[in-house]
Image (spheres, rainbow, N blue to C red):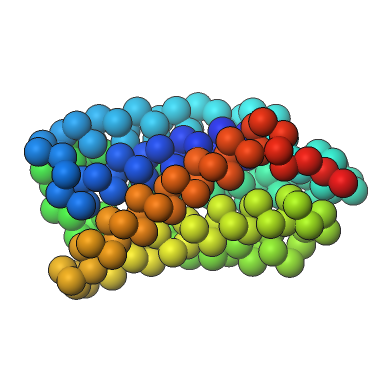
Length: 182
């Protein structure tokens, strides 16, 4: 589930980044892609974990790690649906910016959880890197859209673009078992 979640969230952020950079002539295109990927992320929520089963010692640890990931996926999927609705129906962008606070808080909490709880270094690195990318993107979205600092448009767009590619790369590495356990 970890790899698929990172790929779907990364894909939604990739689509949003092109809209933020102003490269889509019509925002509905990015909105449609973002909603589709966010809904797909919600549908995979009950998949079996790929990395956590061998990284944890007990069933309670696997459940805790999986619950943190499921929370992260749900929050980012709701964010993606909000971005898609805003793009499809041209709602105000400030609400998306304020939602950036929530996704940043959840992503930072997940980052600290995975960085300090996991014992396996490979799993710790992949999960921590993914959540750190999401934290940076969420924070930039907040400052760009909620406050709004329009000078951050290009920075936010390029960080979203590069971060989404990094997130998809982490997801592909997990799925293809490049990230192997100990």
